[in-house]
Length: 154
Image (cartoon, rainbow, N blue to C red; front, side, top):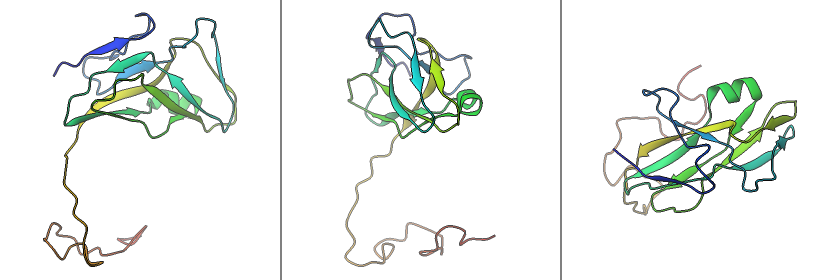
C-alpha cells in the first residue's frame, strides 16, 4: 500500500521508518513558528506537539499515533489517545504527556511518537431492547458475563 503525506513547513523532518521492517513511521516535533527552538514540558504537563504532516488515510483504515518505546522509557514522555481518521485533512498533532519527575526539553526534529496504519472494520451497531446484549445473535463463545477486572483468575 502506498499512502501520500504532505509536509506543511518544509521537508526537513519527514515521517520515516528507521528500519524497513518497522511497523511505525517516526514523527518529529516540527514547530509551527520558525522562532521556536525549544519546547519545555514540565512534569505532569500535557502538550499538543505539531508534526508538520498531513496524511491521506483511505477508507477502511486509520492511523494510530503510538509511543516510541525509547522516548517513553528514557524520557517518560507518553502519547495520549491519538487516532487519525480516514478523510481528516489537517495537521497531525501528538498528545504528549510528561509522566516523569524532570522537565523534558524538545528540540526541532526530535522524535516524539510513531504512526501506524491499521485496518478498521466498519460494523453496524444495533440497540438491544434488553440488558442481555448477547440474546439476539450468538456472537461470543465466552461465558464471562459482567465480570470485570481480575474476574477470570488471580
